Image (tube, rainbow, N blue to C red):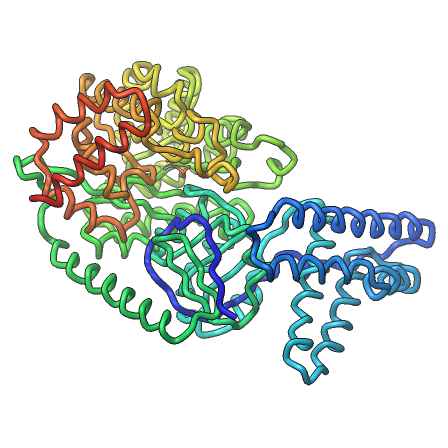
Length: 582
Ligand code: PEP
Ligand code: MG
């Protein structure tokens, strides 16, 4: 039966494909050997998890309300029934007793046994209930492990071909998605996540449609089902009929046609009607992305999120490994500038030591972590400096807020250079060092940055998160994540105007730079450098060449006096209509 689910469309476009349901916990369960003394405690753990999941389901039923799809309520009832069945309560207890093992492992053993039983049913409906068994066990294991778990790539890696597969998961970590980079999936759909979570960013960088925050995607969507993912509108249509499929095939073709038309702009200069030249740069996550940057006509790399070298593997890359990665980007980009951002680890790009923190985005993240770990930071600085002789490297530092951080960081850059000089290793002595403006305090007190740094880049993703106190990864507050909130607009305008006055180059490298609806506003504020995913460059260029900055400046000034988001939105819409009218 066909039905539609709604979420937050974070990467536009349309995909039609079969569902690959990713398990996020059960496949990673390991067997632990317990002593007989520990058994009763382990059984109590199991019982507590069953009770907690029962409660969770009851709560879900209560809160989904009368508008919930009837399938959802039926699934909740079925799962609750399973939880009361001895196959889920008694059987794992017996396994724990007999095998002296942990509750998670006992549950997975029982799950596999039950799945085999369900597979024997001839009736399709009954046979498919094995997915419910898996989902219930996943909920229990998740509860036992005490964290939401991660999608498992093993299954994704094993299945092929990827082009027709829509990955449906509870969540994808940035590391998961990076591992997907070598497979071209049709789309992603996840239960949780916000508009500028790194999962969302990566889907945009891969130019595949993605929807996050669907809440019950994994609950309602079945393995192998056909789905349409409309990333532009944020809807997933499950099991569509032929008429709907045909309609979406036509829309998909239209989008492809628009994209291919834009390709003609690749070598056109990014220049406004009144002759102002705009720099369009690329954001990249892995060295190979630099090829896509070149293909899109980018004038350089404005942001290389170097932490993905770590996220793609889970341990710190050595100096030589980093050097190779940075040199590769430099070589691909040739004469064009390459801006390497030092590790922005912590926050949602979690590393082990951050997991225990309740508020990692406000914790020891990015430069804070780098300064707290001098050997790690020096290793990275040396690697970047060593690679700097192979191209035009720039060094960008994330999450700076205090003058003393800038001073300590610059002292460490000097220390790294000195060690290379001692070892007679060639590097660019005059490498430019810049900082990200992504903390409201930094945007307000920007003069201390302007005095110490050679260039700046505004990270709107974090700037919005911190200005409005909205966790960028949390779908429950995603509706409040608003780039056109007057406070955000004021901070960006202030940063751009201050940098211009001081003669320090400034760019925007957050997601706002790649969204055409903000291009004219940013141009009107005085922005002359935009850094975005390669896939967005041509659309932004098309917007730029239809804009007249001399006309935009007075209109933007008026927008900056507006006090409410609604009014700002209307005014920005009017700016954009003028584009359409030209
Ligand atoms: C930003 O915060 O806008 C940014 C570009 O950095 P990241 O998204 O990697 O935090
Ligand atoms: Mg950031």
